Length: 279
Image (cartoon, rainbow, N blue to C red; front, side, top):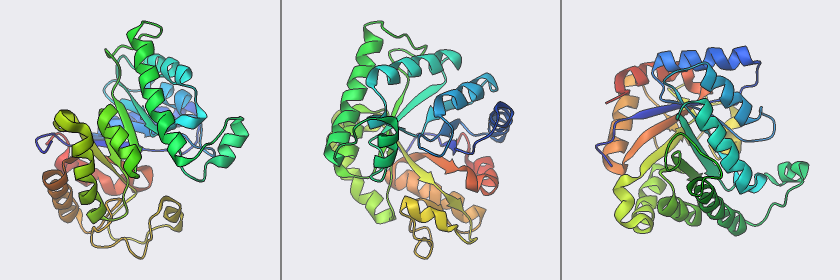
């Protein structure tokens, strides 16, 4: 996996009119981002219409969900909307799936859907992947990318990461320490077996540089006081050269080549992408 080129994704849930999404799509494309990704959570705009606007406003930029909380969506609707977004984007869609955050019970209640245990939600992710691929294979829905758009599964727990390694094309690993990232690799390698080298590994970055971290990052398991010296994969510290070296080292050591970046860190990410995009 270490010979993969870097890819960079911009993650944003900032609400706005269609003109906001169109402008952001064009800027992300001009800056060299490979993907624009939209979360699936209460409090942000729905990802599907936002991504449709992005697709219509760009020509190269890939789009994706980051990530659909599977318990909130039926497999049939996931397949339907995946095929639609892939058609609208002319084959630029990537389907991101997850088991939903543990505190998402209120959202599930709002939507009128059950929210099971962690184990039940992981099982739902696996069932959704199988159902989506079956609906594509039998022609019920027809995406542009055949046999299916790439599937990303994001998570931190062992059960979900094993499922991701077995079934997904992209595995987004959430950890709070670099050492945890190192510990996840044998789990992924064992679960993936012969297809391990085909997996694209990803981490999500919330902040870049040495400035103060906002307190809202705590809800994502990031302790601002502890995220120093590049010990937390979600926070890249130091000057641009240090950040570039850190990402290169993690690609060499862990195989992490797909870096998704929260819009909070957009400006700080620009020189990093200029140095690494396509390399």
